[in-house]
Image 1 (cartoon, rainbow, N blue to C red):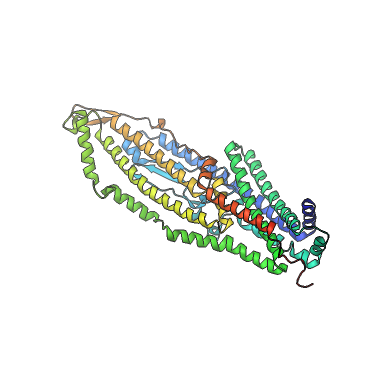
Image 2 (cartoon, rainbow, N blue to C red):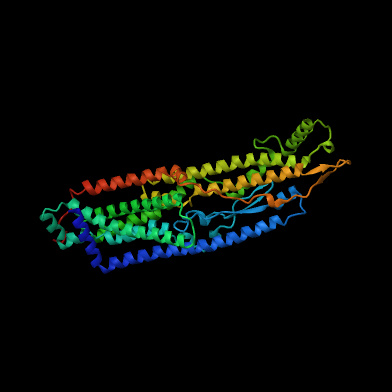
Length: 477
């Protein structure tokens, strides 16, 4: 029975040119967003590759600087795009893509895409994740708002019930029909993404397949919730005009008002230090000591004395190593502790802000779907923090290697001066980013999964058991 009603509703949708036009527009926009995303990623990848090659050539051409001088000269690391960023760019447009790595300084990522955007574009990125979460629920509401109310007003609903068709089955048939349309759109989107990726030579790994599956599943569940509630409201409200008004208000509140209020609330409860304040606090702690004691000069004197005692000499000029490299490395290690402390506190604040959003997602399924979309695409705040951590770890390894060379690559002359040897810096490896697996996303986003499943169960229960007081006859009859 439900399957027959499902087919009946599909035929009704097919006969309505306006509904087909809306579906065609949605499909065109989704496919266009995937193509634009793939083309944009191709351009960005080519530019990043060229920049990396230039940086490497400059690095290998260094031959006159000391290892310490090379540490100040520095290098650059570049953030790679997530393979699924063409589907959902997440926070990536608003975070830096390039980090300058150098001695004594932990630079933040720079050169974000949003820095060159107009204020209009900053309202939302044109990607599939945004369209699936914002636009498609609106289109589904427009197509489903009159699904039951129309049949009630024309008398078809009364005829079906009089023939012994359970009202619950009617609602299920209509819901499955509209969800089927959304599944077609999500499926076409994923197929288009895979096709464009294969055409450009991108590997389709097991992790990417799993992320694609979960990306599609999260949006499909969100759209199912939208369909179930839209059909139920269409059945519960006496006329289609009122149903449309209720659905439009619900869409506006869940996709525009509540997300902005939630973002403002999270930043008020857990305020985040500005980048300037963050850097100033780090400089102060690095100069004066993490706990306000042990200023830098005292730390250097302690290290110098420890090195002299280790080698059993009384003067620096008697050391078989260059104490400058040792002092620089000790200073770096202390600076690393400062960075770990401040970055850890900052990341903890961001995590608490996300926790507020995750809690409110139990009131708004859009927030849950949006968070899962970014997480499975590898473009949320947690994935971005991994790039910052890995680039900082690379900086530490690089500077330590240079400081070790500065300390040992040379020999002590008879007059006590240290003569440095010529160093081949081409042996130092480039930065290699290690992407996180999908388990990383699942670990940090289980509240959104729970929220989405809670909404799904509630919507299914409402449609299944909430049919007792649904009017069969329109107010005009």
